[in-house]
Length: 363
Image (tube, rainbow, N blue to C red):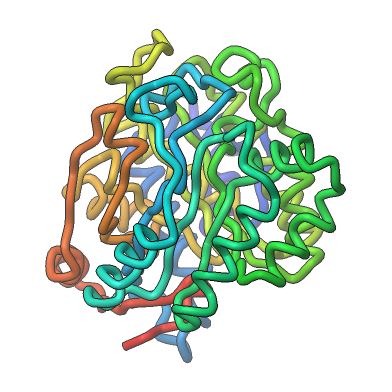
């Protein structure tokens, strides 16, 4: 074996917390999984060292919230989605205020603090319908954060409402919106997006929504759905684009990556397993040096891999998912309780704490 001093230099750079570029990231992907995981765990420790009064590197968080899909009607027909329906389908729906109230009351009874509100791109719902829903939720349940509407939904709203993003987001905030999830990120490479979701927002559109939201003071998350038609280089380009956005606005609270779930979808692509998931998450933790948190994706990988991911760069186990309708339609069917999460966290020697959307500890 030929000694490679430049690789040693790169490994030391990562260990010390230095920023890497795309070419260096590609070299890291060739490391043995356990070595890449150790580097990611080191970067997790560095990123969390000063959090929670210096206790951050030993704390793993989770959130109790509920995914509520306000409609399953969608006109972008993503090939990787098994959830969407057309208006003519017998099981198409739009949620009522009474149905929403019941879901929130059930969430509060389980100690929940947030509703993750997302839907399809419904072609006929008006702006006032959304404002009325937000206002109703905030008036009746002021203690619940509404973490709602992906960037692709906001791009859809811009087209349907014929208003600029700044006004739409500001009006939604005025009605009760508290933060924006990063759904619809998929892979931020247009060549890939044109294959898997050609009618959905393209990369610049997704990033524009995040830029506007951050400038208006909203926190958001960043996501990546991988393991379909993209290359390793595409994944790295995705990480570069969200890192550059974070450099500009510092509005992302966390990165969440998950794998394509193929069941009942139209996208004919071989997904990847736990090994590739852990490798990609570890690389993301190292590359995203300006992201305070990385969330494990137990929903697609299962509780055991979700737990292992806490040693591959993640410092958060995500939500107990009181309700989840989208990835479950594509074949993921894992469930967890708060007790399950706390046990998984304690079993790796960490300290479990419930958090809110802004990663403030609640217990």
